[in-house]
Image (tube, rainbow, N blue to C red; front, top):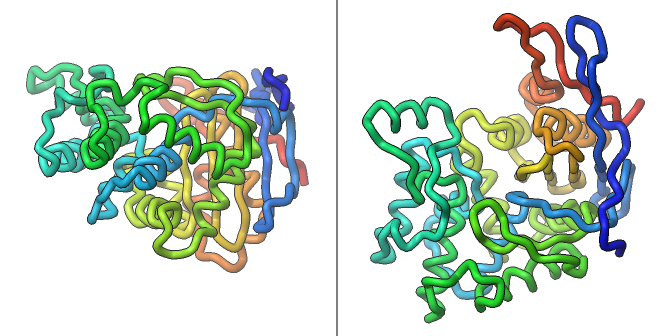
Length: 327
């Protein structure tokens, strides 16, 4: 595997008032159910940081380390980039309370909610950024409880050499089938592992294909059963899982999107300039190269995610639309 991501192909165009004013380049891969490549674009082998798309694997790492969550809603929020809506905050607070832990034990940076309405509500009541409101607090709460239950130190659980993070590294390598090319620090402070985009698609396919009762299947089932815990009321991951209820979907910063549907296949996308406005439509177009006839699909809802709006004077005047894969 090359140690440097080489950049991608033309994946989407930006159209304003009928005029193409820009483009998004990146890489994408579509896997069949047997893991073979149906179609790809750009560099899908060289390592990237998949950012929050790693979260389901980190949840598996906690489970393999002995984490015991009886309520699968806790697994969903552990795998989430939550929006800081009240039901998100309550779920994370409950995980900590049940373990006798304070939100002060979280090592997440203090932030406001991602959801605009939730943020406005915090500001309106005189509140400010907190560790609990940060979108990765569910993952960090699960990490804390896993350390507590394993008898590991809890004040340094984000250190790359911590027992939990070494377990996470093994899980990522196992599920992706890739060597870890680099270790970085994610926005939340937790370690982040680099590997090829094809490995991300391969891992998601393994989640939805796993046997019932396995750690991977439990995480996949929890995310699909509780998509609003994963990405909020209006997040694109939520909307895609609601449009295709058997799909497991997780995005990440810097233009990452990953989707897998059991019995259908998997998709992974990386937009080079980090724009989610392109990552989501491209992932929808890529998903539609697979045969979805065997699964329930709300085509109207899925089509709505197939472009991102371009706005002028408060109204839609164009769109970001995929130009790959071509028909």
